[in-house]
Length: 481
Image (tube, rainbow, N blue to C red):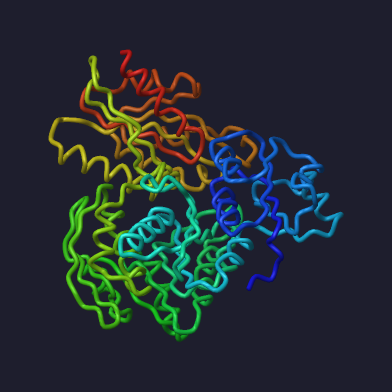
């Protein structure tokens, strides 16, 4: 049972990737759903078609869109200012105000909770777990941070007992959940604007491990030393811990039972030795999304699904059919005619140096395997001034994996500009072998990419900001060249 009356819920910022999914689940549970957002959008229109009443713009009167006041108001405190008129009125009326994570926690009550956390790979691993479990005949509820390409949705109210969700550490909201199965893909300092120190960031994952319910399991990636160390500490505190990863990683951490060992893999296929409870078998499957990091993510999904009681062979079939998530190495299109025929444009959300490294490595492996002489051309938009300053050397090393790069200005999001800080601080440190252009004019970026591209290249737009809007324009610029 939930502790908050969720019969009438108003969501501020309802069109966001996380909020829209929870609104969808509330509608599936026959709640009266209202909301507001700064603009109309595809998620807003979809929710309206399902019965939600949504206003564009924020106003005190929006709390009465259903004809009466809501029983709860939901907000993302990171994105919605405290003086938002709808929040102010909710306080005046004594209406319960929940964070998005609070609402998700309440929606998961009574379910077998499968929570996937980590600095990188949360959305992909959560999505893989959902698709694999669906292929195994399960019907889990889920809430993820991206839209599944195959299902075309980011949330679902299932008929099964399991609820699969992404656990976000950026504001410590993952500590709101009570996982029966918790997965940690990796731990690397990030979101230092919130946590302040590396130690505080690491601590939130230890605290998350302590949230695992009695009889539950913590699943950690043994290839990531920080995640494995978190698992070792949790094991000493009496938590059931299992690991997944390569054989070498399993050998480095003998104190953690290896539930899944990737016996062999290339960029898109894997042979996994699975040992979960009474289940011992070799599982083989291929992935459509390239990269060793994706193979590791799939092993995590395999372990989580098996712990939840699903058939490993059917889980593997689902992993083979996984077509990805929007903005995770997502193919936007291919130039089919003209001087640049054969160039493909992909889009990826990668905005941390480790993510950029993983995606560019996967892209390089892909063009190398194709053997047509193609190169990797990155169009990168740094995200946040604080992150750029903290990881400038790492960004320079990561982007140097591209054969050519166009680097846009920093997307500040919630941060104010910092005097003297722009993307050139990254470019100055990049390898001279990478042909690189600084492009401060966002609208000129497609033409700049076209100037660098050659037939057979793989072009990749990357970042957490507006760079995702450039894919179609780059395709048009290439087709018109």
